[in-house]
Image (cartoon, rainbow, N blue to C red; front, top):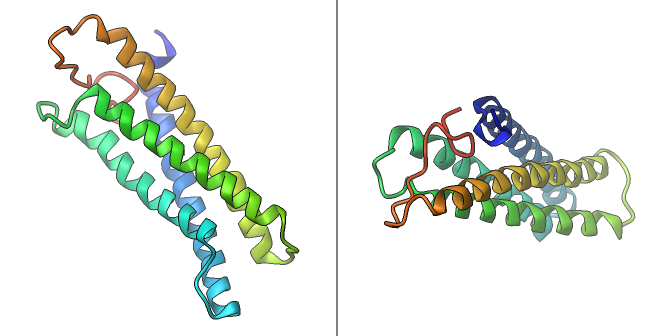
Length: 166
């Protein structure tokens, strides 16, 4: 059994994506709260974008888990839709962790809030790597099954690890 056909790989990917999104959400929410209390202004856009990335990931994971299993006959259950959601989420995490890393690297930074901001960048990079892997698996599924379906109805297979039930 190949890696892309393993339900255990899918379960590991989806759980790690959810855990990383929640960790980054917690860290960035702490930094945003501190920033708002200390500077009496809104948090930097880099922090806000990572909060968005975490919220988007939770919504994307709902789509990636529920649609292939509960709505298998729906038009939303299409391999290209899964690939698009995976790829877009991967791009969001890439932009978020780069922006956050650049933000904390050129600041005089100390204390718990600084450590939380740096940790958020590190966990965001890990989230990006996990989404790179799952996007590659989704692309492999699309490429492998593209020639089998000439009628452009490439349904996402609920049994495939790329977007199967977890």
